Amino acid sequence: MSTGYTETHATSGIDAPLPAIDTWPNQFPNYEIEISIPEFTSVCPKTGLPDFGTITIRYVPDQLCLELKSLKMYTLAYRDLGIFQENLVNCFLRDIVKACQPASVTVTGDFTPRGGLGSRMVAQWTKSAS
Image 1: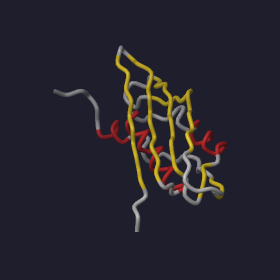
Image 2: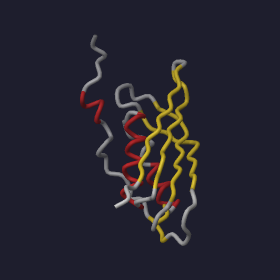
Image 3: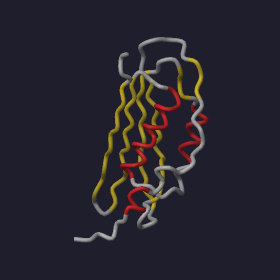
């Protein structure tokens, strides 16, 4: 059964140039930071319809903390970006890990129902002990 989705749809937005997420030096060990982005928007790469949802970032900082203004600019760059919800949650995770190398991080995308179907994606990363 063909759904009309192509490899171009599937990879849309994954490698889009996005603003850098800045950091600042962490001063304390062993605590968790939770950041909620309740008005997140992006665009379905196939239909062009908007996707709305809440992105929640929970991380345990190591040496660096995420700087919130740059995170907001990063988030706003998704507003007109065609990208599947599953991919954007994983891109958030990838870019947060790249920016601050936290001890651990979980990114959750909780998306507003469309056509009676809601979706929630969770992506996690933990620094390996070397």
